[in-house]
Length: 469
Ligand SMILES: Nc1nc2c(ncn2[C@@H]2O[C@H](COP(=O)(O)OP(=O)(O)OP(=O)(O)O)[C@@H](O)[C@H]2O)c(=O)[nH]1
Ligand SMILES: [Mg+2]
Image (cartoon, rainbow, N blue to C red; front, side, top):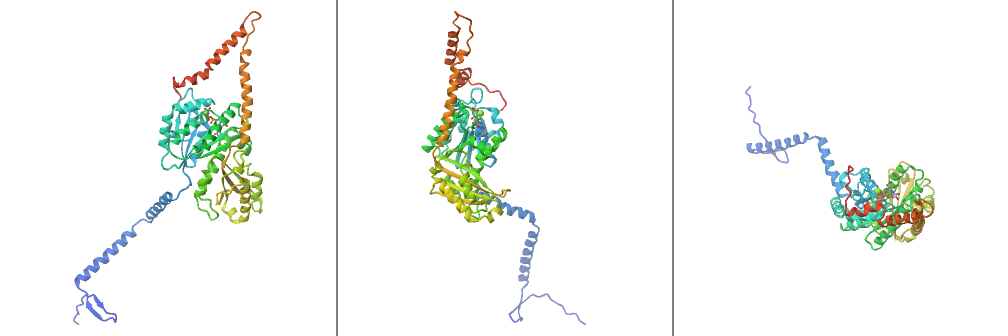
């Protein structure tokens, strides 16, 4: 049987299957090359590590999200002055706020948990202001350039508002606040102040200092040099958190001061499936002007229709971080209701409506904004955070501080006056020891105390600080 030679042919057929024509050799080569190329790409794709691809995709989604979505409504830059101010700044820093702190005492700065380049020692006299307002003022004035450089280095376009944290009772923070605010103002950003009033048990000088500086800050707030003056009162925080040791107290107090503010700032930038208090709402409440106060109250029997509203009637003021504000003066207020997802999903809306009504009545404000947000709380409770702005000073508390300060300052003055008499040694009749003693004390008075001399001369003669920084 003769073998028939079979040729490889590629044919093009028409729609009926009839051979229309035979493909040319050149066409076949071209088609094969294209097919090979397509297959090679597929193989290459198959070799890509899916883990790597996943990481790349995450990378694409992750940072893009972070850049485009803010994680808080206002990016604050925090400045702490003195011991209390530095500790409050440290608490903010832990929550991701850019911060820097200043103090006249190196030993106090050492305990502040911030990177070293964010802690600035202000050389002044022996170190510390010894609760003398004038020393705090001079320490800031004499170190103006150092402070200004650090402010410019720490804060830039990212910080939309600066907040100064100081206590009223000491010397550095309280005495230096006005000068530091002047330096901060040169950065051209709105400024807020967190001002801490002393505990009940503190001495007359602390109370006196607190009132003196508060009156200065209030004036700056009323003339809009300061946009927001937040007054918090250690004596009130003592009542809210009784029985703590001193060390525990500061941490608790500083968290109580920082957390509600951060919470408003943070939650107002988040989405919620319930009502939202958005970034603009928070910004408007927070920058209304004059005094601002805030606080939190917790409700356990939240399923009762009026229980949250009742808690507000009974405890709204008890939950605030300072007493004696007249909430009826509120020009803009806000509140946020939080609970864990399970709690919020069963909480009837009407309960929140009653609560809203009572807050509105308490602050008599036509402008009240509110939001409901889920929070990872491990307790079966509803928490209500409130924020009131545009308030006057807490008149009764200021009066009480003034009275306590003046009564005790008068006793101190009397004691100083009688010092001369107490230092007399009676040598018997005929000596003039008493008048000599009085003369000596008069001269000492004139030259001021040894401590006074050191600080008065500080500008002329810097005392070198040899302690480790
Ligand atoms: N809330 C709070 N208050 C504090 C803290 N530390 C001190 N205080 C209060 O601040 C006042 C004392 O002021 P300090 O901040 O220690 O003083 P200073 O500004 O460092 O000034 P001098 O020490 O006098 O140089 C007192 O009324 C204390 O009750 C703190 O960490 N938190
Ligand atoms: Mg101090």
